[in-house]
Structure formats: C-alpha cells, structure tokens
Image (cartoon, rainbow, N blue to C red; front, side, top):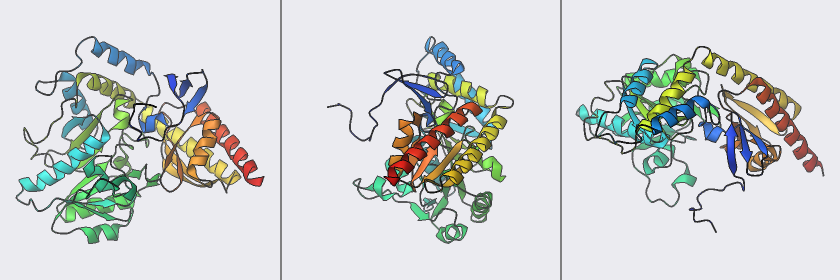
Length: 393
C-alpha cells in the first residue's frame, strides 16, 4: 500500500521522461500529452530554455526567503506589470494561493477605506478557485465543501454569465466580483466579452473591485497573454498560476496600485513565494511567451484545434456533443460518461483531463504543432469509433 494520502483517483501510469508534447512511460510507450499537467507545462516537457534557466540559478542561490531583496523577483514583477494592467505583484507558489491573496486584498482595500463591513465577493456557479478553505467556499461546489465544516463566509454565488443576477447580489457588504474568463474545471465555459464588460461596469458603478482568476487562462493559454485583453477591459486584481512557471510551482497576484495600497508590511507573506529558482523559470517562460509571433501562433493553433474538433463532432455527433473553448483551452461534451471517454483516449495514447458538465478538456502545450494536433484528432476518431462499436454490441 502506498504511503501517499489517497486523495487522488490516479491512473496506474507513471512517466519517466518527457519531451515537447510527449511523455514516455516506464515501459517506453509514448503518449501525446494534451493535458500539460493541467495547463501547467506551457512550453512542453523539458523545454531547453527552462532547463537552462533552472540549472543556472540552482548553481547560484536556491532560497533566501523574502527577508531580503530577490533581483529575479523584482525583474519578473516589473515585466508582468509592463505587459498588463498591473502596478504591483505578489508572488506565490500556486494559483490557489494567488486567489487567496486576491480575496484578502479585496477585503483589506475596503478596510483601508474605512468600510470593513465590505468583505463579501460575488462569485459564480461552476467556478473553481482552488482547494484551500477560502477558495472552495468561493467556488461553492458541494463535492469540494463536503466534510470540511462550515464554509468560509463571504461569498454570494450567482449563475455564470447572468449579469442581472450579479447586479442583484451586490449589496452594502460587497467588496468585489470574482470571475474566471473561462471556467476550465467547470467545463470549459467561456464568459462572453459582453458579460466581462458588464461586470467591469458593475464594479465601477458600485465602487467595488473586479477580480479575475486567470490561473488557467493566463500566460497565453487563450491566445492573448491574459484573457481579459480580448474583452477590452482591465481588472483591479488578478490571480495567475499554472503556465507562468512552466512546470515549476509559481503563482502571482497582480493589482493596480490603488487596489493594493492597503497591503502594507506584515499584512501578507510567503516563505517560498517568489524564490530565486521560481523567478528564474518564470522569467524564462515570459521570454518565450512574449517573443514575436508566439501568441499569434497560439491563436492559429487554437483555431486549428477548434475547427478539427468541430469536424469530429459532425462525424460523431452522439459522442462529441458540443465543442467549447478559446485558444488552446478547448473541450467537448462527451456522449459517454467522461471517465469512459478519457479512458478510451488514454487507450489511444492521448492524455486528456475531465471537467464539469461531462466535458473532456484538451490542454496541449502552447508550442503544439499542427501535426501533433492532427495526431490528437486521429486518436479521438479512433477512440470514438471504438466506443461506437462497443455501444452497438
């Protein structure tokens, strides 16, 4: 029996090495990885630039804590601010910690303005914001809350995409609105540009903060550095993670100077957050994602993937029932139970990940090629054919 706490329903599969969009199992079998560590391995496996950055930093300084200046941290923060709406950055080890920081910052902002009663956030059904006590309360999913006592107070959930419901939920205790531009874990549900613009207008009207959870959508996943750009808006606070570390644990909470003005020394902290190893990798990821043409290629490959999925959905309408997504965050509603579909794809050596509403998510590395997309589509077609044959017998 494994000594690892059994909180994961794992496949009986282990990998010994990876390269680009492929992982190799212990027996040498190659798998096409359209999971990317759940949107983490943005540049694929063993990306040379990331390996070099990590090894170079490992030969110098691993960790000092935030008691001292960390030059790589200052550089990455400045670059993220230059490339976004933000003026300030707090570094974390994960997306959940970044969302926790965003929640604290929103509450602290109103406290600093003499309104400590404004601590509640409007959140949305189907959301996933992390696994801490506050973030599972923000997400509101019963299966994640079960067994952990009374949920953390301060979250008012409304239907995703319902601007009128969001307006109705705002009251004298509301501090802000927390939303994912695309609900990844919730089933690849894309917020419309009109909805995001409407939330921005609501926040302005009520003098509250708009907080975006771009842990899954950020760092180029949707074809823009950040998904909010496509809606022509800017948040006050934003949480990012996953892709920013390219596989190394790293997250960040970005904010305007005003939203973060009450976060004074001692109000928040992290022992490991922003350590030199993470900063070296984060800067190398940003080098790649901001390189000329990179995001344009992500948009092109995203369009290619979506079009190919639509063709498969037309060929297998009972098995691929609805194609969803943006950029290289794609998926389809599965006709069979999603676990059965994911297993059928695994049998075809294609790695995918399930999501809410019986959806199969496809999250290839941002460096995926058209040829690899074609391979993935062939694998889905083979899996669908096998499932169709099983249903007929």
